[in-house]
Image (cartoon, rainbow, N blue to C red; front, side, top):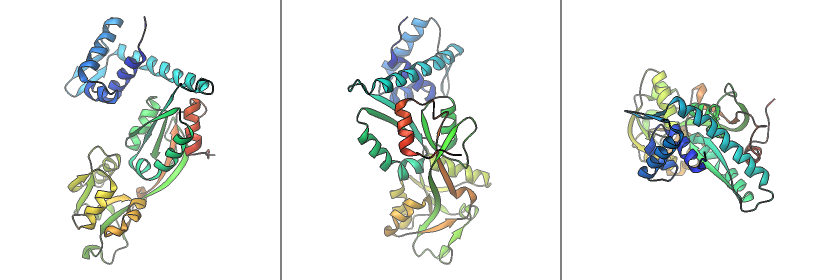
Length: 297
């Protein structure tokens, strides 16, 4: 029996997204084409691979077995591409990298851009996820590398320090409510109107969980895609916001003032993680060494 690698990648996209529609989008396929490919795969194997339910799909026991072996096959293919890359100039490699919001927007673009310029035959599939979801994906071998916020390496993963990230509260300059304040507790802010990020944004999900842990919820007047528009609306007085300090410094000229967020979780260590750095494909290992050359311990 022959397997089409693109079909295997499509199947993994669907399993990860728990949706045929979302999986098709990740694979850049029309829904009808993706559904037909999965049906052909099921017919060839003689067993259903996905169970349909109200919120999407999940793999059957046979689907779980296919997921396990497909990940191994595609990983070994990446190793093959890495080993032959020195000889076959036209053969492209791929590294899948997950990152939380702060890493993706504030710290990753410059070093990643420099790496890609040095590696013209390598592609990086970059996706934003919350830190806890990145750890889960790495443990399930759904990505090669991940940058997440954690004091230490999550259980089952190895890590290297990447950057230090501080979250701050931003208010409009001259706001009388905070005129004499230099720092503020997160619980004090829950009654204020917020300018937030979109619901699928990893940092926004993190702040929503912190609000729930504090016994409240965020009063979001508007959700925006990106730190610049958040800072602009805060500068206009629409509400307050929470962003990385690097973003607050970058956009201070548009009328925002930053307050120290007096919470232990506001100062975060961003870590580059992998199940095992030594077991990475050559391309993934090269990216890891470029982004975070310092090993811990």
